Amino acid sequence: MKDTPEGDRPKNRRQSSATRAETRRATEAAILQAAETVFAEAGFGGATMQLIADMAGLPKANLHYYFATKEALYRAVVERIFQIWLQAADVFDAASGPAEGLGAYIDAKMEISRRYPNGSKVWASEVMHGAPVIQDYLETTLRDWTRGRAAVIRRWIAEGKMADVNPEHLLYMLWASTQHYADFGHQIEVLNGQPLSDADWEAAKRSVKDIVLRGIGVH
Amino acid sequence: MKDTPEGDRPKNRRQSSATRAETRRATEAAILQAAETVFAEAGFGGATMQLIADMAGLPKANLHYYFATKEALYRAVVERIFQIWLQAADVFDAASGPAEGLGAYIDAKMEISRRYPNGSKVWASEVMHGAPVIQDYLETTLRDWTRGRAAVIRRWIAEGKMADVNPEHLLYMLWASTQHYADFGHQIEVLNGQPLSDADWEAAKRSVKDIVLRGIGVH
DNA sequence: TCCTTATCTGACCGTATGGTCAAGGTAAGG
DNA sequence: CCTTACCTTGACCATACGGTCAGATAAGGA
Image: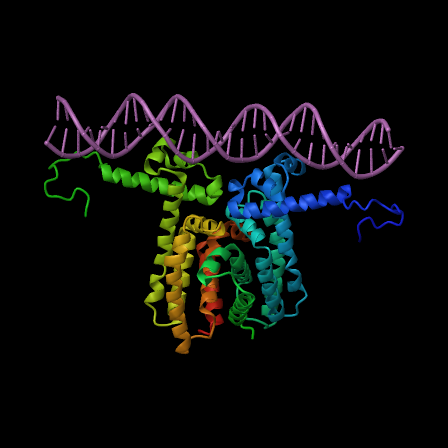
């Protein structure tokens, strides 16, 4: 769907770009972007509404107009991340076997670590602190998701397509290995001496896939 | 040097157990323990000196007598963790090959994740926030450590004892997979429906070792 | 026993933070 | 135009926090 798609829209509407809805969406997006950065870099407790407002380019009071409280803003950030995170599962589903499915899943998760490192950090921080905000997501959406994929893996094992490994622990290993490149990106960068290049990222992907796929008996 | 070690110590010293040095050490230990817990649960920004003091069982002003600032206390906590962390490398060194060395290293790191989950979380949080406090450790001690072990792994590869994988990325995978059980322990517990039992921990260890060792061509 | 030194603690202070509010703008519909 | 509802903002407030300090208490040596 397009914006203002209807046929009866004003013939020559003012070229002044911003309609109410558009402005609102843009402002909210700027706030969420700034908040994700600040929450990732400072943690929930260390983040300040003032800093988020500055980074988003608006006064603090205005920020409170869009998000009533710091918690509400934080929740919005975490929920947004969770959606992206779940979306990576799509590649998992369409696969006929572990080599294709898990390989594509690793690729997708590595790509997320690269593109949304701050999101990954906020998620990690939230979980590390006991998931005060998204406990319900863990108990419902994530739990269902995990059960579903574990069942797929079990089926692949039963069909002799991969070695007999514990599906849950395999999933944990995938999450850990891929998210590590976001959450511990700073450490990796220091050890690497410089930011990871395109080639470095390719090597990382290949390394994770090689070890995991060979580790579950897929060649 | 020992405490009051000399031969001329009072014949019948008061049985009142606490000497100065003993009390100091015990108090400092209590503070560090409490601080580790609070920093892990709330993050640096979310932790308060008052809460740490309460948990350690002494007034806030007294806490400042032992640790001048919140930063100093935090630094002490992080450094303590780092030592434990490095110590796990011992098992790595004494090994003659990857099966023994990496297997023991995984066991050691999993044991640390189980026994010191809060320490692992504080470390993760510190690194995620850009290592403001222990940047120098990353650039010196950890970097040297990593280079040394990578060299060992390269030697094993050259000797045909394991598959040709990138040593650095292999180490990242080991760190990620083992520390995940501490840092994301809450998530794992929720998905598991209950705290991990002894058997669960054994299964986790075995799973990580099986996949990794098979993944690098060791059987 | 007395004196020095380390340890302990309640009360206090300046600052930074999350959040509020009332008044002033500005788009959109009638 | 003019009204209405939405949006923007500087100024303000109460609170909580890290940190200080002066005085109390207790330990150890001479």
